Length: 180
Image (cartoon, rainbow, N blue to C red; front, side, top):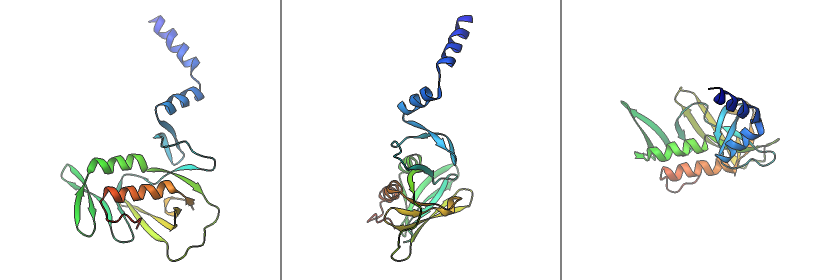
């Protein structure tokens, strides 16, 4: 028992924040952010000026595009299933959507200081959460988004979010996956 105590003390003295962070990075896990504390899956290292942004305040119930297409979770007793509605509902792969959520609830964004000129009305993607709240992602064109419904004034550029939304449309088999 004494030997075990000595080993534990030696290991604790050798641990530094840098060594712990490097260990988790080797596993593909990164520390969380102020809005999403805890360990987060790492997609790629952040470039200068980029940050991670959590679009999942709580569990997502549905995502609706401007065209009315949506991906929505339904509960039947104890069974959960994801459906794509376009305009008729059809079941889609539950695990595919769950993997999408685990990979894309936290996206990489680059904050912008000013909005670019927008030609036309921004398209709005509405996310509804299981606690009956919602947030709107406003696409101002290309990969520029207004995320002010997520708690603070946020104007960002995010090809990561743009690709994540297109990937979800491909999972839902929306034809064609247009981003709307």
